Length: 201
Image (cartoon, rainbow, N blue to C red; front, top):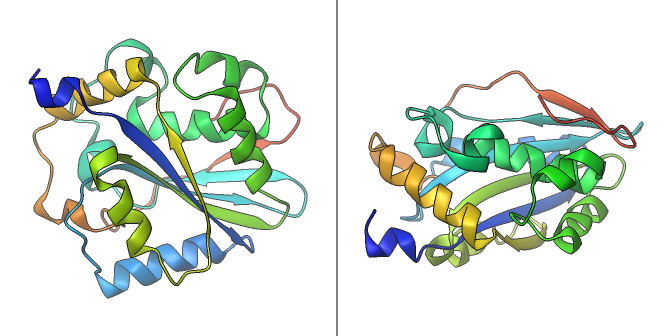
């Protein structure tokens, strides 16, 4: 692993919106307009919280490093399902706490998990993006005008190191990875109900 990868720190950017379908609509609009920012998205997800408190989590595309899962990650990152799994566990830790929050260990601070939970009101949605810190400002700027509540969560040093190793091992990053919506396919949504002590699928 290079010195550059060793020093990389990663952020989870959360763009929260009022309305259960808003985040999905914003993601589709960005994808259709093919906006590019010259940054690489490691993983991304859309989260929706319905009027009954149930949380729906899905990955909007299969392009980019986080979605290809070409090489199995090691350490905690591997146990939770890679970069996309990190986003899912972070949402679960913020919404339901308990086992999900404890399992993340030092990857995400408890107070940051609480902020994520607080940002997801009933009938709301969010876009989550995992990105290296050098690209985080550009991603935030690219979302200007969408009236989102933006949260920036710094991933812990150990987990950032595991992500760097994962990124270095996955060399099949497509040229279009600079687009916020990486790919066209969608995976089956996972569901988490607030108050249940379980983990995301």
